[in-house]
Image (cartoon, rainbow, N blue to C red):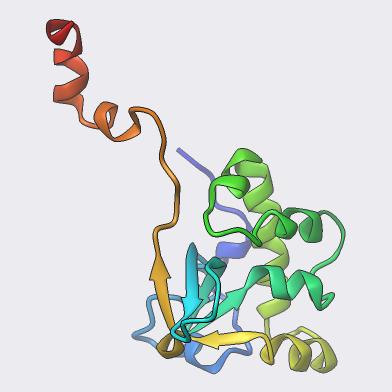
Length: 155
């Protein structure tokens, strides 16, 4: 069983107002990674993290200095159109980034940092989700147990 870390503490609160609503799927304890792009056709797909009814543009947070140190280095891997580069770092990279994002989104974040970060949020209503991972080889084929068991019969 995976042990949850401090980013899942039930008493955490975010300065993102919509993350405080009882009916939200994305409180500060649930910061899922995904790929998004603005509905504007000129935008490019990139890594985002949901919080309330907003999306954190991970690369923009790093570029603006909201993230620093190791988290900023990990965030650089999030400028592309898939989660593949982030996944290549293993769980440690995602954990480092999640901790830094959780810290930046908490109510105890200094107001000047909060203001800078709030300008980088993208409303979910202005964005569309994209394919999160680029698969290759026989990824889909072997994900189904029946195909895996019958593979040697085919050959």
